[in-house]
Length: 131
Image 1 (cartoon, rainbow, N blue to C red):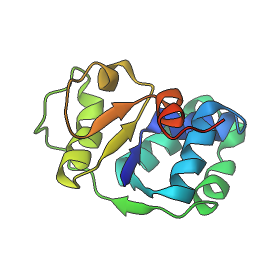
Image 2: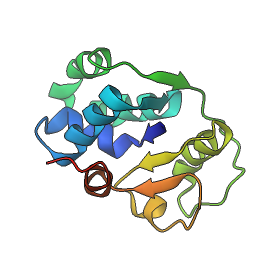
Image 3: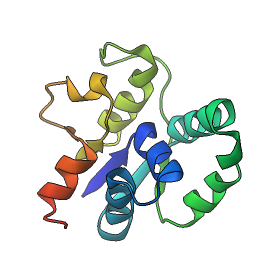
């Protein structure tokens, strides 16, 4: 299964290693095809720089601790989502035929798409029957 993890999940995993988002991220990496986009990684670096300067050095540690496929997120909007900053991630998920997007972002959660399916970290873990 191809699963794209949104930036907010990466940030939570970076800042809170024992959190549900972190557990979901590493479960995906260990059991499915983890997909990250260049846009997610750039956004992760930008947010860490702006809000979590001390965590900046931990980004490379986090990224190197998982196997993932890196995809390019198109910047031109093709699919409507209420937050234009989320459009590249959604576009990439559709183009790459992603099965699931894991996100805590309300803009993703409000989408009513058959594919990709959008789940929170908790919903994903529950669907995988993880304790």
